[in-house]
Image 1 (cartoon, rainbow, N blue to C red):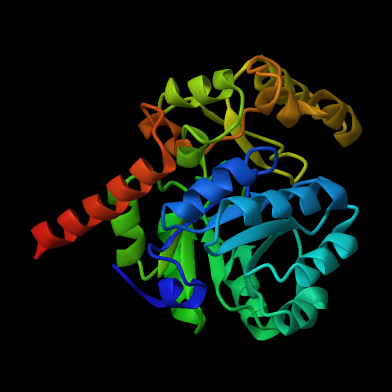
Image 2: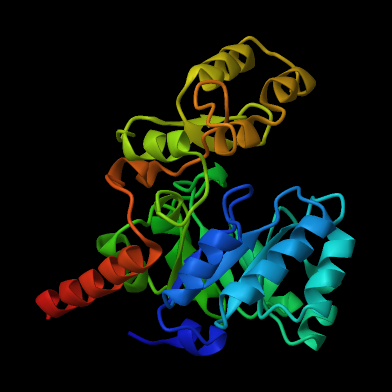
Length: 309
């Protein structure tokens, strides 16, 4: 199963692992790359030294293509952007902003640049800025989200740009992968499913929270202040939503969630921590290796297409 994304990125399967902050470390990302997908190191709010060490470890543990996701709101974004160019990172994905000011430098260094977008307008803007592809991420995804669903966003982006489109949000198995390809996507980005992989180093309680999740356990906080984030329901989300309903200010709400993602991922606090996960968590039933996850998704999609024919 090859296509535009395979050729563009030099990977075996058109499966990209999401660049999740505190989750997408070299351990997970190298496993995905070694399994034939594209592993992505998630920078989040980390500093330049942390990113440099992650890249060093990544290069030591895989000889296959990989990428780095730069959150453009990172205080050290300029320094990290230059580091990515100096290290000649093969693929750079971006979120939370416009990477236009870095595009020429990254292209000069040979990187393929793939911004995450949540609207057709932003996808077209990124194409004009020189992006090699875009990741159209639907509201089903975990973490920071847009408003459009994957089912509606992906085909509209596909129709309006001339570069490959990667679908993200609500994809965890062969059915989701096949559906994304039918919508016109050239590949998929998967986050939540890879959190529950054996190679992912998040706290076991975080993984268990995802594996035990039901279809109704997804919650969105921050809608009132314009910063929606999808997480799994717990005491922290209930308190946040109560405060939000009562008109609490942004500063007060941010104090409640300060360090909450690290608290969940590293410390295993799934009661008061921020357990970011997509709506697809209800489909994740067991921990598997990255190779097993990718093989099941790709081979299952082939069977589905064969049955349809």
